[in-house]
Length: 379
Image (cartoon, rainbow, N blue to C red; front, side):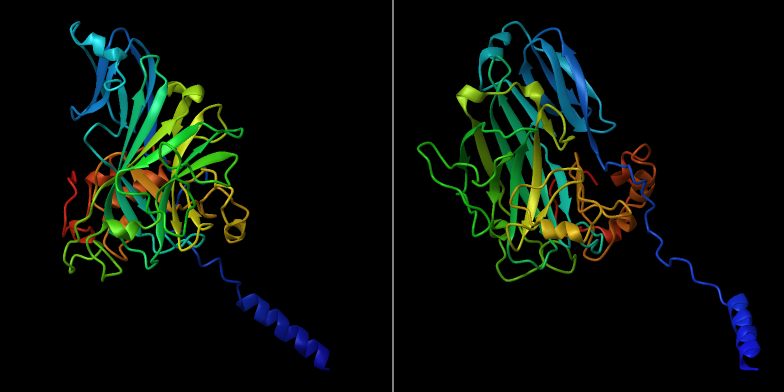
């Protein structure tokens, strides 16, 4: 008699009970194929020695000889060409004048990182924030003689004491193009990186054969004028901490100079060009945080990808990322304020795969942004 009763109870229970749906709904519904790029390459054809300006009148390139050029700029930006006068054209053969800049000669882009990789984190994108300026110095044959990378420290929302920043030059085959590196404020690579002093300057980090890694700093905190606080410039209730810019000048081997047209920045890593990538390191050398679709170096800790599997492209299963760049100098969110709350159009931009709301930083909730200090912000 017990069997029919049990069957009846089972039928009643299953008819009333419904398995719950997956409770997780992504706060930002990002298309899985969105590459998160805020910058793009524009091709310009110059008929004479010219300089290139952006929509704000800032210099993006100076005294380029006639030819075709790929200029990296913000998506939605516009570039104009200014032909130089005949009396100035002779400067096109001078290495001191033929230059290409990102984002422009005297401006900084904004780079923001999260430190909880391989976990999503709090999405405030303020654990490491700095301004970035890149200067390519060209010969009169348009070969890149050197690259100068300048960092403007802005904020630290990370609890890690040890934070490093590095540049990675990668190619589809092993490369050996860097001759030596000069630092304007000492190498300061701490325990994160290993470099040697050569006859001319420092060598790039060893142990990397498929790419060449140039440490920019192994002690990011050193450049802030505050040794007592852990969190810097992420809370408006705290006093503003000033910082010191630092630069790294990377010289390439004279026998291995590469045309400017064969360099890319944060671009696809499977092309026939040399790609420049910036990444951060937290606590130990192997914990690298890269932009989406960039390659880790050979010293990356592969165990970290166990947490993001099956993905190994520095994005989550719902296509969130740990690194974002804007070609403009923009304010970063306050501590614990999600970036899509501080910038409402950020959500629209990401959900459209970057096709709309390109200037997502123009619409902001000012109380959600860090406003106690200023780094020549546009907002």
